[in-house]
Length: 114
Length: 117
Image (tube, rainbow over all chains, first blue to last red; front, top):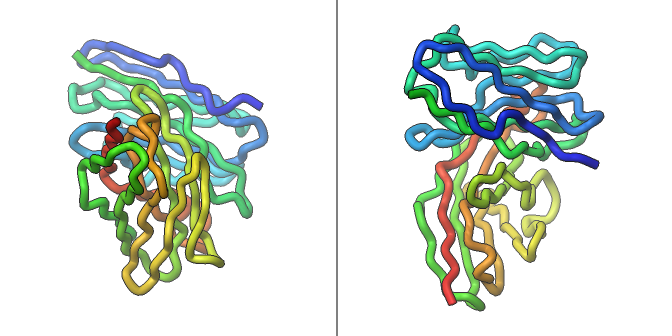
């Protein structure tokens, strides 16, 4: 079936604006992850959703970042009052525990804050 | 806390020669280890994993990796490199037996593999 999809593929925004990034996981996958890939920081974990459990938000870098997952499927990552240091590629992944270990990644959203 | 080190920013190898991309890890208990590959402007693609069992694991595109517990290493190998293998390779680790955020992957900084004719 289809893999993880993300939209938009590219987003350019002005500093101070809010942005929303969307992730559509593989159908049936109960776990969803957001990561950020930037030149200075490498690949960083941001947030993790598993079913109806409370999300693990331990990787969110500031309170300007939030995410939700509606109906156990699509997820939206929101960045408020964007800053230039938010420029990065935002990657979404999904997996299907229990028993599954590998995560399947989407193509990412490249965010540029000017 | 778990961590991964990829000591080489770049590895150059001639096509047809064997390649090795190095990875060492630090984790409490027995690790779950992964290799991913990233082509330009693409997401990460899963290559292989070590969970338990044989120390030598085989994955996609002819790649394999050897888990060495005493050296805390999980080096990626391929007997004969192809130009099309040129990409960015990431090693990742997660701690076993944890639910919730314990499923998150911790990645190394990546190694750029360049295979030349």
